[in-house]
Image 1 (cartoon, rainbow, N blue to C red):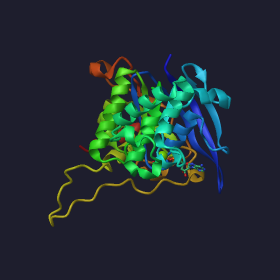
Image 2 (tube, helix red, strand yellow):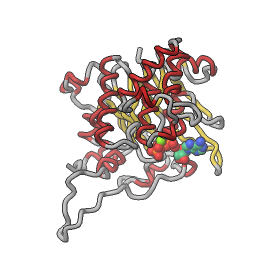
Image 3 (cartoon, helix red, strand yellow):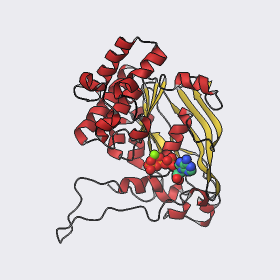
Image 4 (cartoon, rainbow, N blue to C red):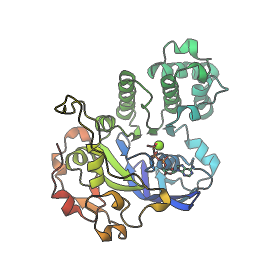
Length: 347
Ligand SMILES: Nc1ncnc2c1ncn2[C@@H]1O[C@H](COP(=O)(O)OP(=O)(O)OP(=O)(O)O)[C@@H](O)[C@H]1O
Ligand SMILES: [Mg+2]
């Protein structure tokens, strides 16, 4: 049984222009000891998906479908039962560190609290474990800074404190929503390494949300690409990076900054390609393929027909052993796969 199994998950929100389907028919599984990356432009529904898994959606949200954690259905689960899981077996690193930290409690208390509450540790033992975790995420002199308050730390330090909070109880599933955006490159690497150690050593499952394809490519062996609340392509990262079967995936990869941009003749750097247009408002998303309004391959039917999932063939037996036993099929949601595939992926 997979640790996490999400099927036909949809959620709608109240917006100023009426109810809108913010996430549509999401399906994926996540096994212990593996990392699933979730990528997509700002506003595509990554954080909402994460909050749905944690049972932390705003009150006006309506959820349909199923979220099973070790076989237990989480949608509709009563709050006391969810509280037992949250922060303990199921933890999240929030995108906005300040919303996760309580400004009126010391940081030490906040990291130690889940240990006392869920694992019933005594004050001294919880403090020792909290200090160890704070040190592991790179908070210098964590023992001396234990009683300091969030405002006495920098943005990057606060992000690391929220990571320590999420990891305190050794969760089975960690959802990390842009966990390293406020960190400089060396600290970012330290945190990514720590997360990967926990995935490998404790068989933790990690859902890693990041707009940074470098971070995803380094950490996640499985990938979901989201656009406008729908998954457009999913599969093993290696296959996805190689084939980029969906036009939106291609656009995302092409828009990723590279270190060596070609120098224009005048000595100025070349422009990065962008995806034409912008993400429409939730209520304006097309009924068919949600990317139809921005896609170079669109034909009239794309606006009205919903693309069915299409499993692509690639040679899973050629996957390196490091990918482990779980091979995810490469699934594409596109009405014009042949047209897209007839164009070569830009190197
Ligand atoms: N509480 C809310 N009420 C109404 N609309 C919301 C709410 N939260 C998010 N939305 C809308 O839902 C959509 C998805 O938002 P979400 O925060 O999941 O995006 P995201 O993919 O995490 O983006 P980012 O990369 O910027 O973090 C957006 O259009 C957003 O405006
Ligand atoms: Mg977000």
